[in-house]
Length: 191
Image (cartoon, rainbow, N blue to C red; front, top):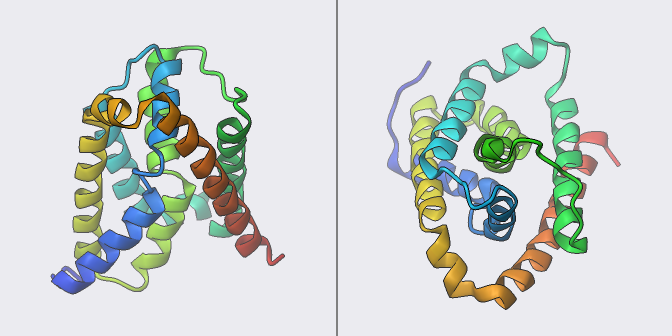
């Protein structure tokens, strides 16, 4: 393992992960999850669980997938379906995902698959071959801190956006999420 620190490389990886995690674009989804969970979103727990998932997958992801006989492409395709259904919920205003125990919304679907989803995990496996491990770990920490503050101050963001702003963002980012799901599917099926 190479633990060499490079600030420019760390900033590149941070930017890549920020774009893939897309916590700002996920605000409408997070607000929907919060409402479905009766307002019970634990920002620290969601951030911590997301961090653990990303770190474990960074170091053991290929081994885990190999052990169960799943390729990174298969994993990405499965993730594209999850993103597809979340996007449909946002665009059409329907509820496909139903959590029987709202208290778990902090972990599922918030920490996984929304924050540390298949797009993020697949990206971690991809960038591991290209960047130093220390840069990736620091980038994960920076992004988890950003996620924490967005979740912590979600009420403030919700008030700033208002009901109309949230509705517009939900539809717009639903389309973006749908396009991301299709791109993830196409790039891993060769279509």
